[in-house]
Length: 145
Image 1 (cartoon, rainbow, N blue to C red):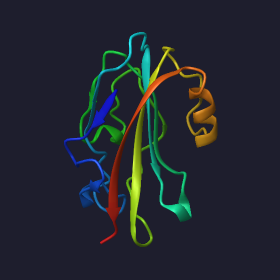
Image 2: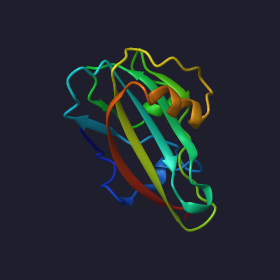
Image 3: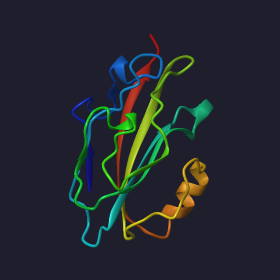
Image 4: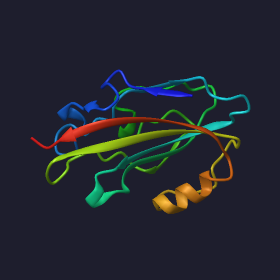
């Protein structure tokens, strides 16, 4: 499975418009080559800078199995049905340095991820573990200006 963005290249700097203190616009994402048996997708965006590793910026569940992309700005509450934002999009705004933000797409063998809005990253990951068929990761960096 492959995850890419037309908003930034893998391991490259994301535009300031994606930052929380700027326009807070989620980047465009697209994916391909999901495994057979995929019944839905989930998505996470996590800050992987060592001092804050695991800080959640976005968690999405129940993306339809025929979906292959999210347009720029989908994190403004306009997710395509039946998708749910478990944690709404909060763009990057690191206190210092350049931080790596890891987007992970999960192909799932279930139509619905039994998790409530506001669940923690650990709860999200625990719900994903038994139903994940494949994952794809894309990293974007962000430097506060």
